[in-house]
Length: 339
Image (cartoon, rainbow, N blue to C red; front, side):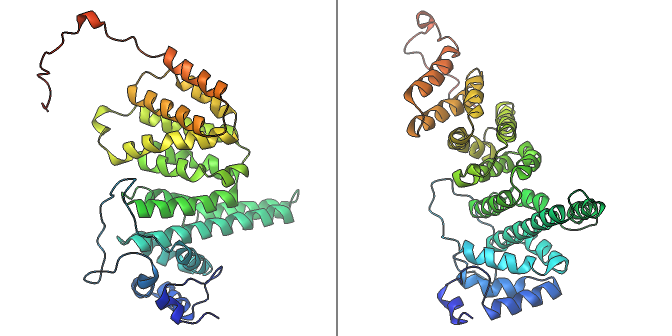
């Protein structure tokens, strides 16, 4: 058993949670449905700045290049798994964590939801393997679906989707890590479930970011489903109203897509054909996403002939340049600065 002083030093036991103080705090939190004591115990080892006035107000998202604290994600995973081990009795605690404004509370909640989803996937596989071709096996699969949706139990993916709307990058990164664990456990089925995520900017960004992990992609075979999620996210951006241009979610979605597209294309050849189709896009912002995706492919393992072909398709569909003879040089742009 790990020395309780490990918590003061910020060390996290590998694998399962082994700190008796935290384990006891989880038990009390599950019983009361109140995470306050548990979060206070985790605070020093969370990797986040110390609390001020007993709480941590939600801070602004500082952009993709801003330095961030190194969150103790291993501890959050271990605590989340220990919470999920309590089963249905812990659902009230998970909902309380999801309702918190504190970043680390939401990160722990995300890992607990991932652990719930992983256990459900394991139970469904065990039921299918034990009762394949039998009425008992079919009944087991039905019970798995009911526990996930129809009896008031917690729905991990739906709750994670709500957390993905958080404007703070630390929380979203925690959701990405949790969602990758769910995809690894559920495989291709999880990619199909992400269709509900691609109707919102931040959720779509988180879904694509979770999928765009090369080791995870290597275990998937549903290339058509991956392309479908990519198409939905691209269409969401391409058809967005002009009034949304300043929204954080739309900016993040466009900024993240080029690297995500390149990761998908490295696993599924059909993504390359999708890029060629999107070279016909008319909206400048969408064309910029495609151009950056082609540039990302150049930096990868794609052949120069392939990327040149994609770049040529994009150039061929570019709108004609304005007639230089009709441009009056030196005139003042009277509309500049107007709102």
